[in-house]
Length: 201
Length: 201
DNA sequence: CCATTTATGAGACTGGGTGTCATCTTAGGT
DNA sequence: ACCTAAGATGACACCCAGTCTCATAAATGG
Image 1 (cartoon, chains in turn blue, yellow, green, red):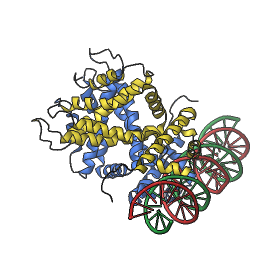
Image 2 (cartoon, protein in one colour):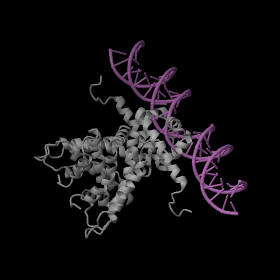
Image 3 (cartoon, chains in turn red, cyan, brown, purple):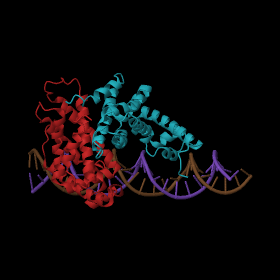
Image 4 (tube, helix red, strand yellow):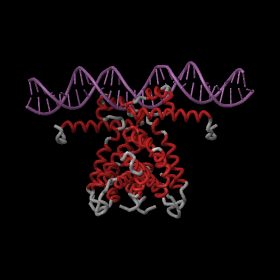
C-alpha cells in the first residue's frame, strides 16, 4: 500500500466521471453565470447527488479549474528538460509553450474558459492561488538546473522572481488575447510580454 | 450630492470604528487562527452586532486586508511622481519604497500580519486579488508616464508586465523576510529581487 | 424643536462546504 | 460461484459566511 500510482479501473472511472461533471458544470456556468448556479443544480444536471459532486470537486471553483493542476506539472516538467546551459528566461519561455499548446489546440473552448474565469472574481482568485503554487514549483525547477557556471544557487530568490514574472507574462498575454476575442496571436503576445525585460526599459 | 469627498464628522467616526474593529479582529485571528473565529465572535468581542461588523467589512478577509487598498493607491501615486526620464524598472523600485516604509515603521505588527496572511489560504487568495488590482493601476501609471523618447506607448502590455513583476518582487521579498522572522533586511531583499533581471540571467 | 437622514440591531434566508451514516456496488480471493 | 471487504453513492444534519429586510435609535440640519 501507498506504493505506486497504479491506474486501477476505479481510478479511470473516477477520472471519467470527473471529466463528465466538469463538462456539464462548465456548460451551465457559461449559460447562467458562475454565481447563478448552485451546486445542487450542477449535481442535478449531471444526474448525481450534491454529496457526490462535492466529493469530486471540493469546491465549485475546482469544477472549472481542476485541469490547471496537471497544466502546472507539465510546465514544470518541460522546464526541467530544457538544456542545462540555457538562461532562465528563455528556458521559461520555452517551457510555457506546453501551456500555450492547450490554447492553440482548442481556441474556442479555451477562450470560453478564460473568459469565464476572468469575469468571475471567485474563479480569478482561485486561479491566482494555483499560479502561486506554480511559482514555487517553477522556481525550484529553475534553481535545480545546473546554472551553467553562474551563481552556485545560494538560494532560490532570483529564480523564483523570474518564474513569477514568466507566469505573469502568460497571464497578461492571455488577458490581451481574451480581450481581442482570440483574434490576436497568443504566441506573439507572449513573446512581446517576455520582451518587456530584454530591451531593459 | 455626489460632489466632493468632504471628510464629514461621520466619515471620521466610521473610520475610527473601522480601525477598532480591525484591531480586535486581528488580535482574535492571531490567537485563535483565522478560520477558527466566526464573524459572530468577532462582533461580540468588539461589542457590536454581527450585522454591524459585516457592514464595516463585507468579508472576514477584509477585516485583515482593508488597509491594502490605501497602500496600493499610495504606491501608484508615488510612481506617478517619479521623474519622467526615469526607466520603468527603477521607477517601480522607488515607488515600492512607500510600501516598504509600512514594514520598517512597525516590523513586529507587519510581520504578524504577513504571517497570518501567508498561513491562511483565504487571506492569501484575497491578497492576490488586491495585487492583481494594483497591477493594472501601476501598469496604467507607467504607460501614462512620458516614456522619455522611447516607444510612444502603443499599448500597456510592456508596462503591465513590468508592474506585475515588480509586485512579485515585493511579494517574494516579503516571503523571504517573513521566513527569516524579519531578521533579514527587507530593503536588501527587494533589491536582490529586482536584480533578478538586470544581470540578464 | 421637528423632520430627515444614517447607524445599528435583530432576524430570516440562501448557499457553500463538512461530516456522518446507511446502502449499494464492485473487486478480489477462496 | 460465493463471500467479504473496500469503495462509491445518496440522504441527511450541521455550521458558517454573506445578503436582505425591517424596526428602532441617534445624530444632523433647518
